[in-house]
Length: 150
Picture (spheres, rainbow, N blue to C red):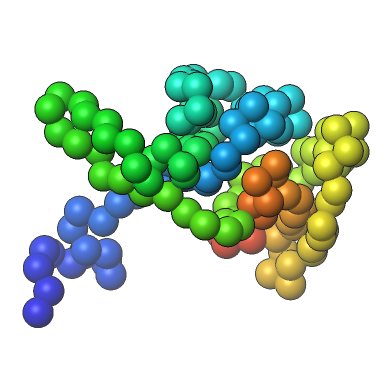
């Protein structure tokens, strides 16, 4: 049984985008240096030893210290934020334009960040992969990896 109305194959109330993406890193100082200086993101909020929040276009990248978010109680407006945390490397991708790839590669090289892979996808997308200080797989990918339009 399904609830909600379906229009053109999409359920009513279906999300339209990802608002935030989370990765976990115990060394927030190293993560801050990587995401600010290597990737070029703007820091919006930081709480020492707990989190870093970065603006990525119209989305947010949240970097949490899992040692804190698994155990600490945080309340907003009297409501507790659910505890969370991750183990091991995760993966996410930044949407990038093809003409930015040379500059991305140069910034990675300038900061001694190894490129793990560069892939020209059969469908027309392009990707560069590297690792952040926590070992998370960070991808820079063209929109054409998943969609026809750039």
